[in-house]
Length: 279
Image (cartoon, rainbow, N blue to C red; front, side):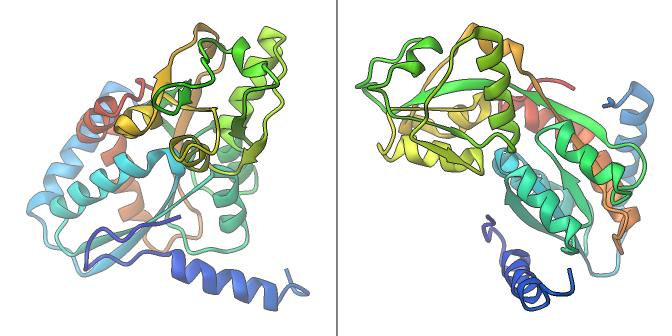
């Protein structure tokens, strides 16, 4: 999914649609962490570009759906610090983004909601170097205001009378859900499994579901549309978010600058304010 947020900014969803159509037409054819020195270097690089003038350039960033709010804000700040640069954002489930990049979608930077999906690209040589973990996140139960199903714990989600929505297993939030199920011995029977955590949140906030498992940051960003119910078992599945530059990028230097921006002081401040944990 993607959202236009600046008149001068080009979003890539449309181009991805073209790409998907082209792919169909041609279907027959085919952890780490930022240390203090790296953070200081990133800050210096970002600061140096504030006064530098660059030729017009568009950086395409593919990011996990749970990063929509924070990366939209960071893209705006990055553009302000780098005159002439536009950031095009494409948000979706991490697994879907991996598929798009693998099929040749024009991404410069990839930010995943887990290391598992990033590893698929590094193992295939589609991301350069070693991606850097820039944030962590955990799950929380989201219920509609009023909590008609009276959900109070993770075990309550196993009640057959409760309509529960979770992420599909291949999506990071779904993998985290499966980890918690295994650790607790509680088996969920969801009425729906979604490919992006934002879709789970949408079904809860619209009242289509009695409860859903989303990230702490999703609940925080949803305002009054849902109520969050923390549960201690969530600590058994902490997702680490890595960011890396796509090997086929035509803007690798700029991509590295953006990744450094995310792992640097500005990025960490924005992410922490949204509820993400430190790397």
